[in-house]
Length: 68
Image (cartoon, rainbow, N blue to C red; front, side, top):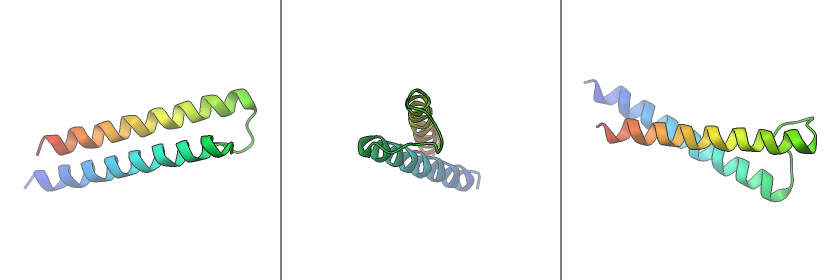
């Protein structure tokens, strides 16, 4: 009974993390800002933070799914 919420949370985290990572990668490759109204230096920092969160959420989702 407790595996259903873990599967749901794992799936949501993994999908959202992968989508965030894909979105950030596409924005950076196109030369578009990840955050609106940022300079070049903070644009790079924002992309790194978004990519870090994408990786973290993907890893957390996979960790939750591996416990099933």
